[in-house]
Image (cartoon, rainbow, N blue to C red; front, side, top):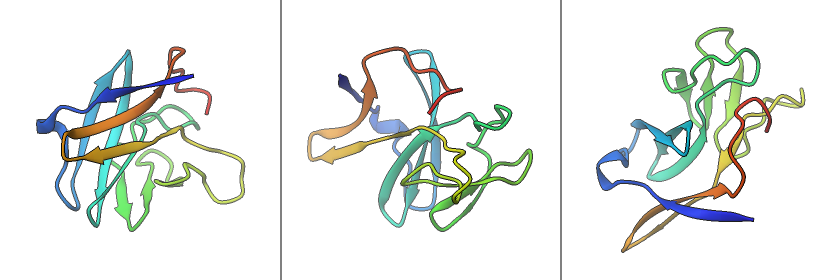
Amino acid sequence: MSYLLEVPAGKIPGPGARSLLRLQGCSIALFNVAGSLYAIDDSCPHQGSSLFGGKLDGMQVQCPAHGLKFNLATGCMGNSGLKVRTYAVQRSNEGTWLTLPAEPVDSSSS
């Protein structure tokens, strides 16, 4: 089960930008790539480093601590099995929402 949580209008990044959201006890990085929004846990599943400040290369964000690259749409790091949690983003004229799990988010599991 999941629920929608509205993203404050001031936190929606413009094209090429990103914002950090603190929602329901977790940190979520929201990226705008060519007008599409992608939301992932801010914590790298390798050792917990923040992904928010990582280098963005197309659809991949690179962890600044160890260089691991994660696809923003899938959360996957190649075929290694290492994955960061992703969140569906819904946009309409009325606003922008993230789909969050009903249970508390644990950034260490994806």
